[in-house]
Image (cartoon, rainbow, N blue to C red; front, side, top):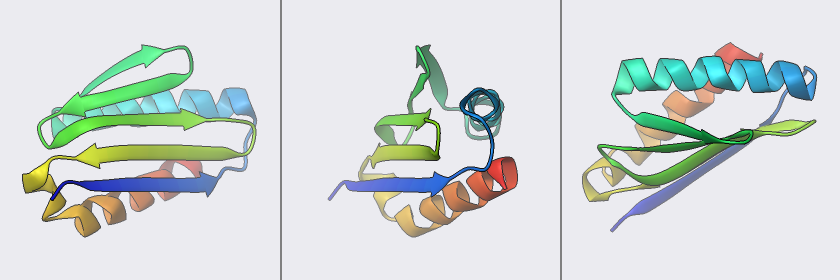
Length: 93
């Protein structure tokens, strides 16, 4: 069965600063995991192997990553979620 992951964490920067950090994080995701990231306004749309669909966004207070995983990736969803948490902590503090 497919699994969804949603991580929302507060950030300690301005909305513009958070957008810049999200763009840097998206670039890392593309190069490290081979996923495709396309932008529509301030929302990054993520797709690729293991990810049916996903978004990453920031607002004045929070950064949110929301992914719908395919079946094979769902088997390691807890590791993926931990990796997302770690990446957000590293990028946003």
